[in-house]
Length: 512
Ligand code: NAD
Image (cartoon, rainbow, N blue to C red; front, side):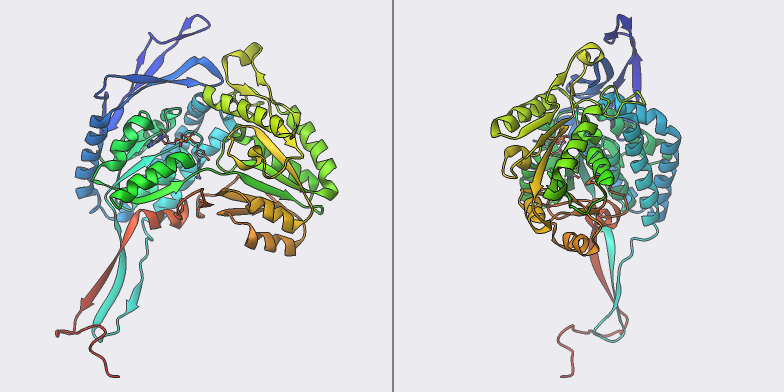
């Protein structure tokens, strides 16, 4: 899969081994047709080149789709429980490789090691769940309106599926797509995010080692601007699954619609956490810090807005800011570090731009807001944990997805006004409420307009066996995770078996 070369860049003057990764097409590791490559660098220390990857072009995409099409002819006929056994085996192998892959992931995207272990675990959990689906995939049998006639509906695979993934969950999100797709009998071409291809390569390599036949999963690395279109427009692709920004979702959705491809879009978020006067404050502060600064705020489900009732507002703000200031920022491979860097320079710039925007809008910045660039920080893209208070819900920092460690705290009068603030937004992915009042909790569960609601927990922490996704600009109505994924990667076929030995006409042969 990868070859080592000693000609890579150096860290502190010492030559390092730089691994060169090829595309995986039809069971072979192959160079891209373009002859071009790109580097995957560690955002905590940009001297560290994690790997060199192929900068692919249309011919590579076409070759991968071709291989997937040929593989589909056989793979769809492998019994689903057998397909699922391979996925189960991959789960076992991921468990053995968990530490190695977690470290690779921290190096390539900066998330702290505890969290990258969670990311790999999510792929393992998905493997075990989807392995079970191989023996379920139930369809209904139902009485026919005619005598001696049998009726049922079965799930069928779609064919070649294209997957385009983001960098923030570089193994978990590809696993949400690849594993249900192949258990259902589809074949796949995946394009990982250019910031984090290695983790997806590690997943695909494991699936191949576990016995997934050649051509069933193909990986083509490169840039969305170049290989996104050939992947989406190819007539042999029957389904596209994108997780990414709302802007890219719009492009993918409209492209897919032109050729009636199935299309699943999991997009941006601006997630509210409401803290009412009666909340357990210790719990809410712990949750708000974890939700706001986990993955450096770079989760689609990040707690980027905290809406706090006025009775406890001052105390919440004081204690929250104190704790945010104390978070240890650094290289995520250090077990004591609590927050890593931004994923790349462009994201850090976006974060700093929003710091400016928040200040110019009149929000009070209570902590953070500065790039950390002294000492060990100088080689990475680090920002201090940043908290704005007294934020007006209409301000841009409270409306737009920043995707960084920038939290807005918004005061509110009541549960009703908090829900109104929470819902008055373009997105609708995750939401949370802290209260001890069961009536208020159930009101919020009903009225928060989002795909996910947590009670007494922050907006992050989804489990793999429940549907995952959002409403409004967060998606187009599909769900990943659990049975939601099986719905996307299969098509219903209704089957009627007439054993009456005569022509029977539905709706016509009847006694009124
Ligand atoms: P992005 O939209 O920039 O990129 C996502 C993927 O799309 C990448 O692989 C990229 O190469 C590709 N892409 C870019 N331009 C393309 C084009 N024109 N055609 C086809 N593909 C193209 O997003 P990102 O920066 O990688 O990830 C962050 C975004 O993802 C955030 O908005 C975040 O909220 C969202 N996200 C959503 C979920 C969810 O489940 N709702 C989960 C994680 C991340």
